[in-house]
Length: 113
Length: 113
Image 1: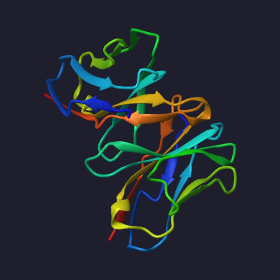
Image 2 (image 1 turned 30 degrees about the vertical axis):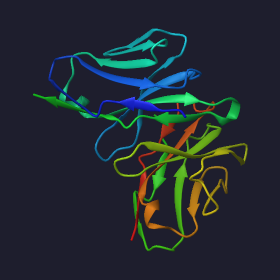
Image 3 (image 1 turned 180 degrees about the vertical axis):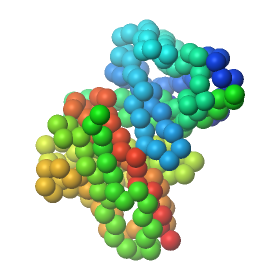
Image 4 (image 1 turned 90 degrees about the vertical axis):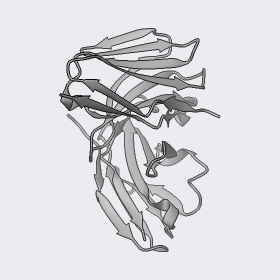
């Protein structure tokens, strides 16, 4: 069945770049998403990439997609303490009105001053 | 910025009791979802709702669960007879297109004792 995998933890120093990786299994995914969850908060949509794209840049965020390897990454440039959160990778699967999101377990990013 | 709101933020209930989790989706959105996250596990799809009917439901969404959009603004999830294993964070989401740029609420933490 469909599955999304992520590494569980990442620790970086403030000002460094963070790279969070994700692999997925469903090659028919149309969109792949990154969501952020801060402590006590909901799931905030950060960015997404369409499956026919290789890269998308949005301010400090860069999403890279390797469709052949089914590998997605999120790079956060100049990581700040406010970026400390859990980052979820999710793929959109299904067709028509039956699309839904399949989620990874989330990567907990700790930013050290 | 428009947002999805969920109430209550935390609900404690006794096993066997009925609970209703409430959500107010973004007003012009057409697709509505419930997901849940059991502590330490992945976010799981429960059900999608479009045009006043269920589009798709997961295996988790058995006869104990039901959804309703009673008044054109609220979207509710009812669990008829709660079990201990229903304890989880329940997230409501809405989107303009199927599972595209879905916005999530802050979640309702349900604790069944």
